[in-house]
Image (cartoon, rainbow, N blue to C red; front, side, top):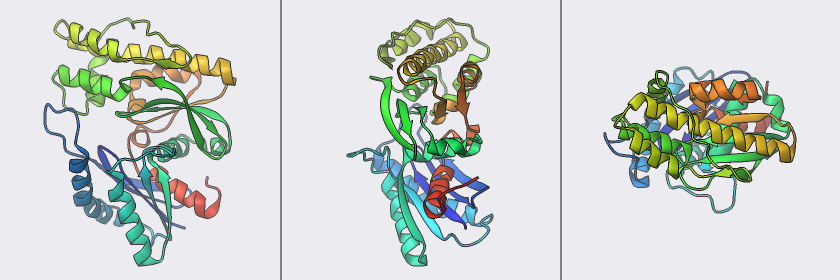
Amino acid sequence: MITLGIDTSNYTTSVAWFDGQKGENCGRLLTVKSGELGLRQSDALFQHVVRLPELTEQLSLTLPSRPEAIGASERPRPVEGSYMPCFLAGCGTGKSMAAATGAAYHGFSHQEGHLAAVLWSGGHMELMQARFLAWHLSGGTTELLLVEPGLRPQKIGGTEDLSAGQLIDRTGVLLGLDFPAGKALDQLAQAGEAKPYPVKVCDMHFSLSGMQNKAAAMAEKSGKNTARFVLECLIYAISKATEQARKQFGPLPAVFTGGVSSNSLLRQAMVPEGGIFGSPACSTDNAIGIAVLTWLAENGHAE
């Protein structure tokens, strides 16, 4: 059985197929003007509408057969009231395709898709029916989740102001890097030296706005050291919050997803602490997780 997944997040248009074992994702970042820190929802929605047909046609070149089920991200998180207009492009397209072809349709949240993509690409599908901790680290989200069997996440910690991705992107633009700045800041930080500021972590929650102010003060002296400082501070806070969660909930696996989880320094620091990561391509925004969840909804299991 072939399933099709669609995800239209705030910064990436993605379509993917999955057959129970393997899959392929086609995605493209939305265009953000140089020097700007993001997109209005209306601009993101317009770009998704333009790009979905192009990416679907590109994906069709590798599609083994016609999809029997179609899934889409309908909202940011699987909680009541979660809403973002940009997801209307993907779920509207998915519902239309399903109605026209007779395929089944399944709706999920963007966050659930992230988790499924990492578990599949990282070879940990057994965790779909287990309890584990998860970090969703992106431009709009820095949440520590307690995930119950059946992939049912509940927020238990994270930031109380800036997200990890916002701190990275704002620091990157401050240093003259293009938005989004994650990859470039990661590369710049490799040559830098800095000790982390001991971010206060209380009951698995912390604040990052102070780090932005410190980064702004450091930026004129050394870009590479500023980049390193910001990432080391993030890693410190994430590690401490994970430690506190394990004291409360037991020695659970910690899964990392979202664009920030593709950062090489974070991976180097957290893998020795039991962190589980997917491939970098399946950590950033993608539709493969939605395709996997759609397959599971139809078949009940996947390898």
